[in-house]
Picture (cartoon, rainbow, N blue to C red):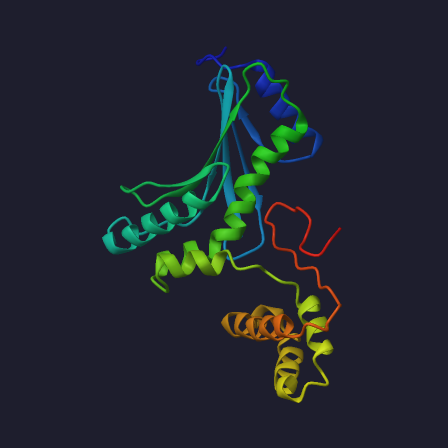
Length: 237
């Protein structure tokens, strides 16, 4: 018997999607709440999901497994600023910080009134928080451990993540330019271990970008993947 009123059709749609995708999950029939975990790539490896079903909407909560020390007021202030800066830029959902216990989560609201809830809608409502945590996890870690200013962390998180193969292809185009010969060598050396490509890589990318902008005769167009949600890359038709 249900303890709270919630839409069984919404719950069934979510249940069907999770079941069809063979996800491991629990569902509280009294409360209308789904629970499951999702592994992602990045600094944060796993996030915990709660989907709270109501009468004409449902809310997806993605909860970070690590939070800010509840007794560290400076860390909470850093994280609050970081989250405010991030939320100002994103279009769907938002990050939240519990200022009492330091919990960090992402909340995504789905209005189901007069809407046929499809598997694609359910999928996107779960994928959005996962992608956001993957995208901004390095900044979250920096705020927890005090490694960067909030403004710098946001800018670094939103720098285009360019594929190492694309960067090397660009470098090969510059091989005959003796000024950039050391850049080519350093890129090749670093490409052997992608995990170590951090700040220096971004500096090298800037060097290559400056060179490309100055070279008006270069007709080769490199497509860089810059959109978070899989839209066409720059240079793609």
